[in-house]
Image (cartoon, rainbow, N blue to C red; front, side):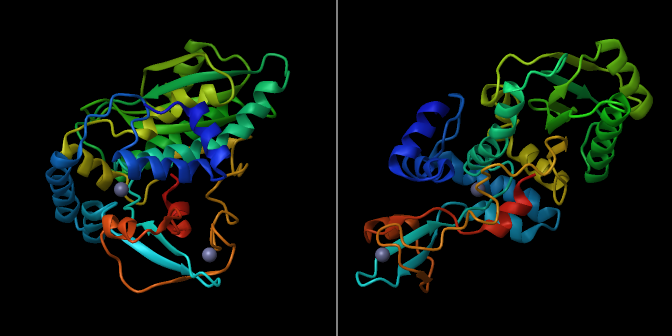
Length: 322
Ligand SMILES: [Zn+2]
Ligand SMILES: [Zn+2]
């Protein structure tokens, strides 16, 4: 199980970003078990991945299916242009939302993206304003589709805007989630703003969406602590059933899962996904790096004594932070 504080501390002492630290942990341990309840290990993972990929391919998502199947098996190779021509490698990830290897990296990025704004609002003393945890639920339709998810998120946004009509300086970030082993679509939200009573929240949610059940309470943690509540849903898939994971990927294809509005909208912070994050020089000597031919198994790249340099696919990451 990863201790985030310790991870951050180690990342700093190693001089690498938290995301790279998490990637390294994934390489070393197979998966990063963020909450101590991971059930996957390497041998069954192969057939589990095949079953998920089958669902993606059945639904026409053939490149995604193949990416999911091959996640973390191969590496891109790089070489620096310095005198010593240092050899480097970067694992080829699938970057799918519900991939047990990629989800923890997603988690690390979101954490570093939203931590500064949450720390800032936690330090602010605005009368009546608090960090609150909100859950908005919808009726289970027995399945999940992209249009259903979009409609749901639109309703969440309209509900907040109606409630906060005359309020300034509020913000919210939420994550779409389904229940463990079911298709109950709901939103877990971290909300910064004034007091909202449960009945009022329920009334507006019902008017806007037609759905009923809501829940609101003051957030337990502050800053990153409050984020953990929200982001734990990002760091691991809501089910171990490969068919269900495949159907989630299909439903969320080209559909955002994380949403930020108000004060939290477009907050870049020290987001390692932002445009300055791409590493472009050698970690040993600072020289420029160039890509080499081939994409061997990761084990081979490691045995060649290559240095791990994190992922280089920042474009895909951006589209994937969702
Ligand atoms: Zn992956
Ligand atoms: Zn070098």
